[in-house]
Image (tube, rainbow, N blue to C red; front, side):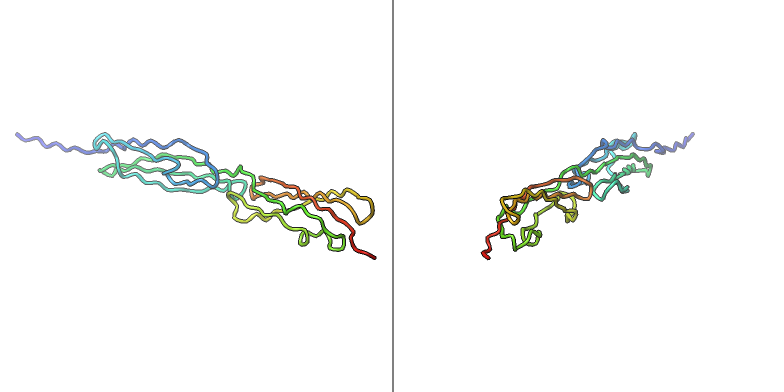
Length: 177
């Protein structure tokens, strides 16, 4: 007598996601940096068909967001299984600001930043830092047109991280009447 036996693999592979992680906004978010899923199967042992799909959810600013990485493992019989890895991207680094040089100017030149210099700024994540401001503290000298200006430059990146620097401007009246 003959007995017909059919063997089918209907068991999903077992997939293990890399741990959820938090990285800086300038970090590479590819699996080479954030981890790769692994999978095994009851029949084929190691599963080599592992893929992922990313979905980005915006955060409180351009450089804070969450990547939901859905990993999928497929065994040789087409059985699939998924796991989810969460990658939190954050900008917690202050922008860099370099003040214009301290200087002494004649009072008729004026204290406008176009005359006294502008700071140089950059950020690890934001392409261009545009939120730059300053406040002046004036300390009077011996006459009305002689004084020292303590100019504090303040810069914010797109995520609200800030930094500052101090420029000292000595204003003198050297014009003869």
